[in-house]
Length: 509
Image (cartoon, rainbow, N blue to C red; front, side, top):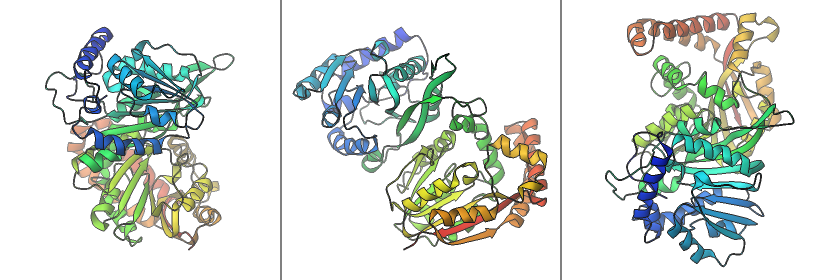
């Protein structure tokens, strides 16, 4: 399905929503062409390119059972059927289902189902993969949550959900005027909905099934063909939730609701300067990036890219291609919004993912850059091993991050701070040893704690000078909280508990 003008709200009477959607698609599904389905005059070109891209993002479908929701006229059905053991192709519109049947009825492993997805009833744990393309933006919030909950029922343990929606704005070039029920949600709204879906499990119902995010990213076909960055896709996995992170089902949900809630991110940016959420701001990032001697055309992985300041700087200054990844969906949403406005900068992409679970092709990047994210990672050795794999021979790694002094000397309030932040902090000696153990060579470590203290003092002074405007935009309480946080960081840095380092390494030729 495709889209036109955004609806004002994603909530409301479900009967009214369904009626509006049905009328809309009845009007635009009569000829059952790819153009009418995608609402785009470039539909044929887009379909060929996009299908290849989307198939490349899916988990292995060989021998799997796939539920294809919003299958339309079957753009993906045939591709699924070539490898999958079974495909259930479901769509709301009878004309689309019939066209799909005409095109693919010769495939014996496909069943065609005409049904309203909000009323679909399927056997529990009967599918390995649920695939949805341009569907949820025609459902209310309650219907989307219900669909995610049902998907947990239909999926086998460890099964995957792939879905794609138009966010921020439309994909197609058809103009439907006022007659368009599409809900253009923000990516964070979809994140909140799937994080809210869960099913009790375990003998006593003491555990739950929920979703963990593998990645969320922009569909690049639309960027290349139409300079359109509004097309966002997700890959989720059904998992058993036995351990909660400070009361949240995933570490990502914890970050997005605590340290990296949207309001907190904007406060950090007010402190550190446009495009940055870490001490020293973009100027310090530029200083570190200079060490990499980047060259035009190189590919860079920015791990923990935040709101994209360093990524934009690298592409605009050095002509490199940057993939920025971050676990915080709030961070990436802000970066994506800013990317939508930067139509003249196609060399930067952003993706929500847990880099400790993500996998990229071997030798995919010339450089890996990371700022203030490794402190969140428990198994650093495993991640550094992935960095070695993903970097080309002779490629470079540069990490700017916190480390600590002698753990035996840490104060109780610093220990509590580390626990509250969810940090796994280590000494500089251990950090460097982990890089060498992972397979990097020419490992160099620079202590930048003195610089950190200078930056913290300068930024504290700037905050105090901007108190009135800060309080106006946020609150007195938030101002005092940040000021107190800076005082603590200065105290811990002066005591040698909290330290800052730059870690450089190379992959052997």
